[in-house]
Image (cartoon, rainbow, N blue to C red; front, side, top):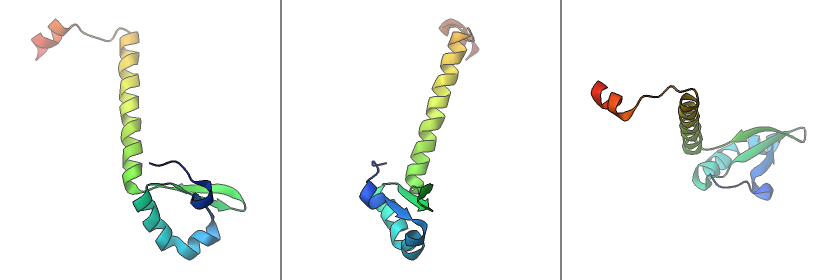
Amino acid sequence: MKPLNISKNIVSLSDFKTRASKMLYDIQNSHQPLVITQNGKAAAVLISPADFDFLTEQIRFVDAVQKGLKDVHHGRVIPDEALDMEL
């Protein structure tokens, strides 16, 4: 996902409603997020499905690594030899 371009990627809800189809097309092709504002404040961020999948995959990976590190910290590991015997 590319970084946010403030002049292009922040739009009001009314502007989004008017040009939703084009903006959705642009999000999918540019891989830049779109921030939608309501009453002058950020209300939502739209990203492409591919970018959403990428972000959720990264989160799952980081969670798995953190869980593994926590297991090591708490001594929940087995030696390679024991694993070889199990397999």
